Length: 256
Image 1 (tube, rainbow, N blue to C red):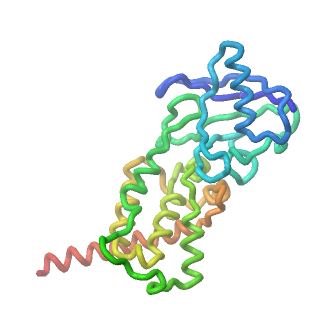
Image 2 (image 1 turned 120 degrees about the vertical axis):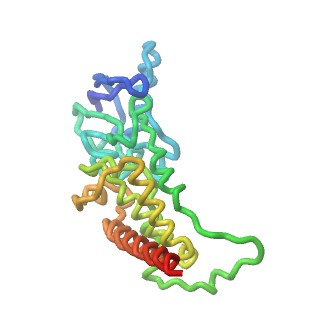
Image 3 (image 1 turned 45 degrees about the vertical axis):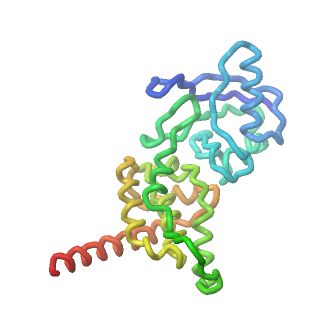
């Protein structure tokens, strides 16, 4: 198969950047999109050119590092990660536009590589549970309703790729943050920091410059793990509850 790639090229952070047309010829239909880029880079280097910079790690749809926008769609035409997008998903001879994830909170470092550490900082702001040293309770002593367990695990499968942010017209990170809050807040181990966790993660999300959710739903449709938009409703409920409880606590302290 043969393709014409219009690839975003940016030499350094803050560079104006431009699109570059590159021919990808004699590509196996069963090659993944990243394997196709590997072949393109080998040919560029052989001709003395500069390879296209892009991120990847596991190449098994687990880590979320391979975050590219392909023809305007995060990760490509299928609801999977970029490494699981195959060239058979495109027409022979097709022109494909390849860009980094576009969001002000994801600055471009070089070509298709973006800095998505803003998502890491949201997790660091509250994504933990209390632990103590010494003997720990038996897990069976804290039974979890199967329905609650399923909801928590459905949220926990978020790989933090940022596709939800790239797909959202507002550049919101509500699906990501909602998944992380829902995962921990539903389980018994997450109750101690429940309110503080929610407030801290929402506050960090706002400080990172992400937009607000207006229920477009593009985030869930682009998510390779198919995380439900329900986690955004959960986040909104948890945040209102956390703010209410904080106000009550402050009023009680003042009264005393």
